Length: 518
Image (cartoon, rainbow, N blue to C red; front, side, top):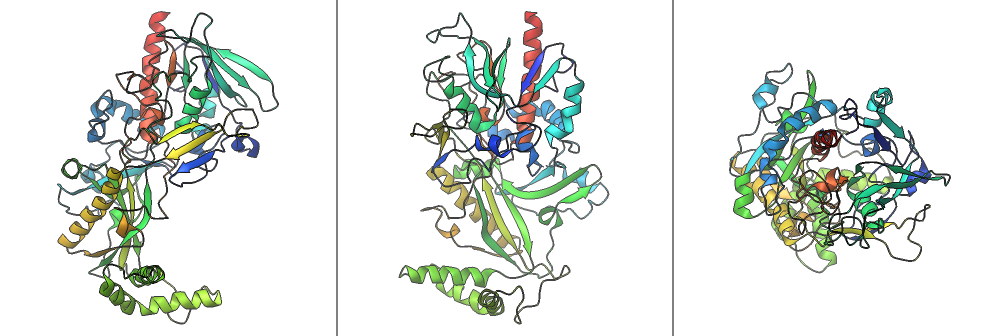
């Protein structure tokens, strides 16, 4: 946003809590408590220094789908409204042309001739193409441009503690105003920064934290008149190795799906994804499936684990004879694994080490899917004794929850893939440990994707969302939120490209608004 406004004539102050590199003391401010579904510790899912979490992101980029804007939790505008901002966002993220699913275009690039899509039933699955950013570390990449901008001041070591109300603003007013922010340095110096507009762009976890701590604006927290700040937390649930496909032909190769493909000006890969028809027919969310090639069969190992788990619980697993067949078919793999475990060896006499030119015999199935917005999935301030950081600020509690619809999304995604794998004659697919009971429980290896979204959602109605379509907090004249906290829904695509697109749209809105005001 600061980059987009650097030629606007407006005076911009950009406050960054951390410095220009990683610091343990600053990172400690991100610690918090987990409740609900277990996921990674909060201080390892993001970074608190200039450039933020782009300092360790994977670079995977894709726009949200048009259908993502038209669900039971609609966005205030449609996908087409964001298209031109997506094009600009692609350039900022250093991607190729924003022609993600134009497969003929990519096939026409040097090295793209072999990138063939599977002929899936369009009512069930489609191929969704992702682009990969270098990845762009925003702080490092754009620091010089910000430093050269005469109207932009970047303050490092400037941790915002709270939003401060304007002198004539009252918590009981229907529409309040913000004077600025109260901040401090790591060594304890306190200061204020005031402005005509304040934009909170601190991610899906710290945005609700800052709003909730700003009780001088409103007793329940800035923008929290309807108890919506922090609610509807969403991540992209990830089940790695949820299934395994044994290929009919041992030399099957699907380069579009199996690898990152470097083409002139872009790096792309394909996934298998949900279609609008499948989502509507089965009442499920979006999903994407990543196929990871394997040159060693894994079915026997997984069947042995499932038999052992069932025996420990005094029961027989579903598909007993299939499991026994898998074990006998992969006795060499089981002997190899047992030998290496018993003797702590990297090699064994039972299986030769894999070679780069070994044929691909199967593929692991990784499932990443959209979470249904749930008001009980939320971020709140931790009121436990001692739950404060080094600056005396309340830490947060993340209570991540999912619904039965999310179980249906995960199980139906795998069922649709199995149907298509069989119909296309590619091979046969077997659900692996934990993925066979998605209707009852989540597997232990389910985790999030570090995509924190939805905690200050947009909506036209103040009773349904924290901000309006421009990201302005409904109950204030001049307080805005930017970032993935705004997302009403999350789709299945990684959020960074949409975050940047929204920031560019918001910058355009602010430039127009403030220029008109003079």
